[in-house]
Length: 373
Ligand code: SF4
Image (cartoon, rainbow, N blue to C red; front, side, top):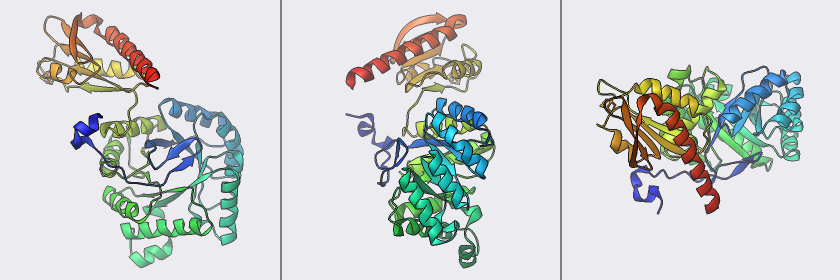
């Protein structure tokens, strides 16, 4: 029996969407919710862009988007796509030729709004290139760049206008018998974005790319994204996510995973459960957790670790985690292994010891997964 079936309050019923592919990554249907980010290097600087793509992939990004504003960028795309371990999405605005060049260069997906690229013939050319090179398309509606006629009709960016824009773009692809697409309706306002996504989710079975656009800096943007995306994901909406921060793209990936981890939708790496600390703490919780986060970054195996300052909450939290440490008195604390009290360790040796134990437990989990397969 799965954990979710015995704890129904944790169950999230995902909206049923069609499955498409972004290169090797399935999006929609029963596929895991993928985490995306976007590079902020100059795309024509292929080596800087590849370096950033690799860092994002190492942090767990399933898909990385790269902006293609000019020919030099699409020229660099060939090398970027070849060197990237994850599928690359080419971000295109208006210039249909960049879309064709990006498809030819190996992009796995084109982010382009077919209604914005001009004549039906241009649209057909882009779709032909996508078909010829196995690219999917993301329709990316943004509250900040809605079509003029919709702004005139609705007076301001609103959920109805965004949904109508999305459905118009969808129709163009469908009329051209193209169905490998996903769609986003982003806004920087969480209320607007959430309402638009909710309406969109009812109006189409296309996979949905979630994002709160221009969310802000690391702290404010993380909170805004957690509220906006968290609310939608919790109600089952969303097949792939991008957290948009004015920060290093690696941070976007980390925040994306943390949001999914909080909702039990994806698991990756060590989920550290730690207390805020107070006068009862038997060791410096804050400093220890900061050091552990750093030293455990290489662990990709989903597992949990509790680091709790004292016995008020330590044993209870440790019950539910793979490895636990609870502060005690006299410069030492208790190690828990698979929820059970195991042995004592001095505070000054605890850091290295916990890292060793987590690595050991990760190895066991990996071995178990192999023998189950
Ligand atoms: S677990 Fe103990 S140390 Fe941590 S905040 Fe609670 S009472 Fe304070």
